[in-house]
Length: 362
Image 1 (cartoon, rainbow, N blue to C red):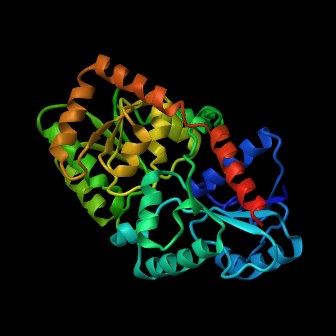
Image 2 (cartoon, rainbow, N blue to C red):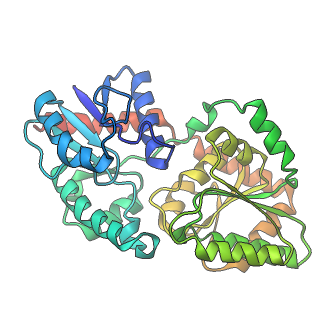
Image 3 (cartoon, one colour):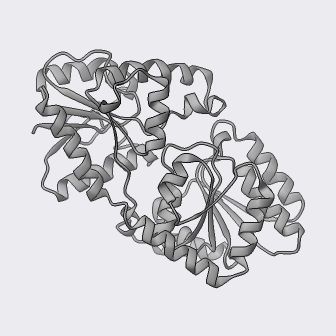
């Protein structure tokens, strides 16, 4: 099978979609499957150079498909297929979430309209659509008139955290210089509206007000709708809570933070999968998530789930875990067992089966 993959985020700063693209490609290579990478800024077999990802997908990709005629081309960016495909290529599409539609306040109005219209067209053009959870598949099918048999579920892996680059001496010295309190509470992800960061801030503020000494570490860049989170952070600091906002950190640093944390918290209102809590679980850290469909599906019994609107319930869960090393170890063990079942090799095999099925249908 002549397989081409959308690599338009390959040379960009790592995002969730970029990580999925790279890990699936490397897993395919490990399994002896050859795939071309198209659309990266510089890498791969068909780089786009200085062109924008949108322009490349809407204009040049159609020509590539018509002239190079792969059996299958798969787009990873939720909606980035051409408006029409000429020639015999069967196209696949990964839809990681439909958050612009389920949580409209999380994005700008122009992006929400782009997302809806381009996803509608891309899902129509694609022979197969792949979602990372049944929750995302169901949300997609409720909003678009797609044949259910065309929409597949392939979960992501988490074992990349074991293959990540080693922490260099400078990064280790920087982490050590932070003098983080033992068993600190960690959140990793963007500071944006749907991530609900203010829930963990207010929960930790309640614990601090009740006399528990703790440090809250927030790793992630500010994003659209970060205002409420920043307001909660400022208020908590004014009341004496030790809150460290680290901004974006490289993957080796993030994974070391996860290893060192006492508890990892992921309080999001809306997710398509939820990779950070699975990464923390795979690294053996006790994890608490918000009680929403995608996260419940991913973490199973490997993490505690609390309502995303009740800071005192989260505070009680954190108080219990921070106060009991045996309970932290038990939860961490369940999380590790659960997260170990999510591998990129399994994801690549499942994706390859989808691609083979649509290639055979041509």
